[in-house]
Image 1 (spheres, rainbow, N blue to C red):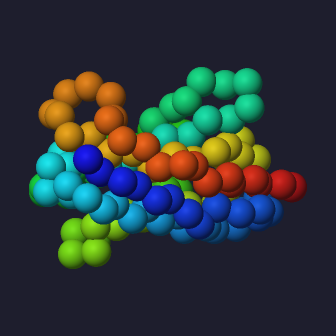
Image 2: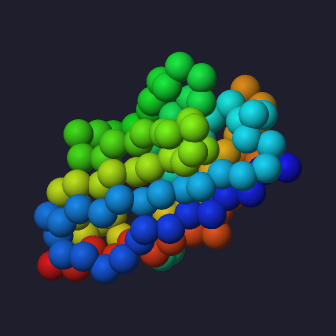
Image 3: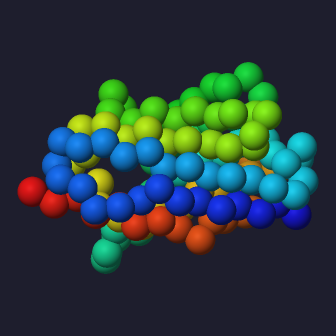
Length: 119
């Protein structure tokens, strides 16, 4: 079992920055990759960024490339999402997620943290 606690959301203005954090505990040695997904009101949940635990490869959704950066601190079992140049359309609940298996959806989820961007 892996437990995830995500935090760092808030209300900001367009153009501002926020950093989300996700602390993993439990069987962290079983994690293959971690990432952030978000869900805006009335929309489906979408992948924002992913980082592979071994090697550090990353993936970003086109909508956040160049603005968001995902990183990890393996020693602290923590994943970060640095969000710069925030836009109104970035408003959503952001969820940290962890996957154990190489393929398939994440098995573990954080509780979510709200990010609200206003003009």
